[in-house]
Every structure is written in structure tokens, then in C-alpha cells.
Image 1: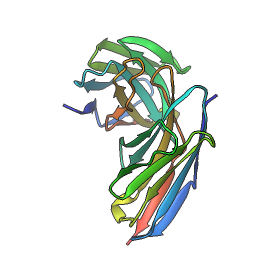
Image 2 (image 1 turned 135 degrees about the vertical axis):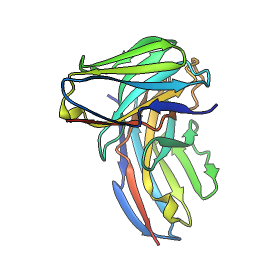
Image 3 (image 1 turned 90 degrees about the horizontal axis):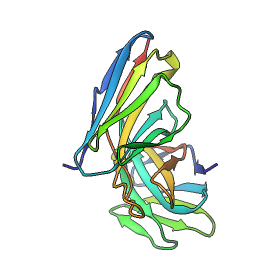
Image 4 (image 1 turned 45 degrees about the vertical axis):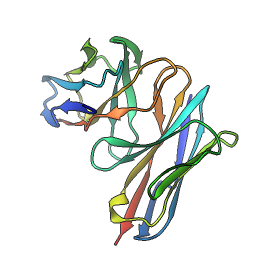
Length: 115
Length: 111
């Protein structure tokens, strides 16, 4: 299995809703990432988990809450979002072994619309 | 702060043309430069470059890195309509696996 699977593919939520994005990989990768991508912009890093511990939080608002229940799963919990949070949310994984980086494998993304 | 600049921002060519996409970077403790192709959804990996002057090639695509001048180019020969996409350049540091992405080049190949 050489894929990163993200669900759902599309999500429309109101500003008072609580929802979660899910990401799963079975490649034995130990680093997992959440990126946010607005239209016509590059992906921007949100969070990095390394060996199931949060290692980077790029000053993301608290209405986004990441969780890594185990080495294969990564969640992003959403609460009280704003319309400007509408974007493509990409999950990625990499080997995570020190000194051995061969790039990311990206999931297909969740297109989120906040109404 | 790490910086990745791609040019041109967009490009329209006809099938069969050859294109060169540029990526320049400023990053502390550079380790690698990666090229990705993004169509509708997830970026797909093309190349990773770590050493200067060594060309990586895959079919009609090739890429090379110049660590002295801090840039890379991605060449596509005999372009096809299926090459239409956004091409992203990203750089990674020697510590950690964080990638910083450039703004991308939007390539449109017309029949």
C-alpha cells in the first residue's frame, strides 16, 4: 500500500459545526503533516507529527486541533471555523527517519467549504 | 525565513514545445529540492535533487540543481496536453522533514 487516504473528499460545514478530517497511511511512515492550500497558492504547512508527537505547529489558530492516535492515523478536528478557512486540506507522510528523506506522499485532499 | 521563488508564474505553450521552469531558493541548512506536479488534487512527486550538476531524468522531464547559484530548473520536452498542471518546487532542510513550497508555475499546453 503506497497511498495516503484522506476522508472525506469534500466537506461543507457551518461556522458553528464541529467536524473532523481523517488521514491514513500504511507505509510505515513516521512523519505526518497537515497542509492548507488556498486557490492558486502553494501548500502552507500547518502541523507536523513525528513519531506520533506534535513537532511543529505553525501558529495555527486553535479552531484547528490535530490529533495523531497512532502511527498510521492523523486527524484534524475543526470547530468554529470562518469562511476564510475554506481551502484544500492536504495530508502527507514521509519516512521520518533522521537523515533519510525521500519526499512526501500526499493524500488527495479534503476540499473544505465553510458557510 | 526560508524562501522559494518560481518563475514564470504561468505559461501557455503548444503541444510539442519545450518548456523550462525555474526555481530559486534561500534556505538555511539546505538538504534537498523537490519538484511536484499538481493537477486537480494532490501534488505528485517528480524529482528530488540533492547534489549539484547531476541531471535527473524521467521520460520527457528532466531537472538539475545548482547549489552554488541556489536554483533548479525543470525541463519538459515535446509537451503534451496532459502536462498541463501546476508545477511546485519545494525545499527541505537538513534537520526535519518540513518542506517549504514555492508559489508554483501554472503550465497550460494547448493542442
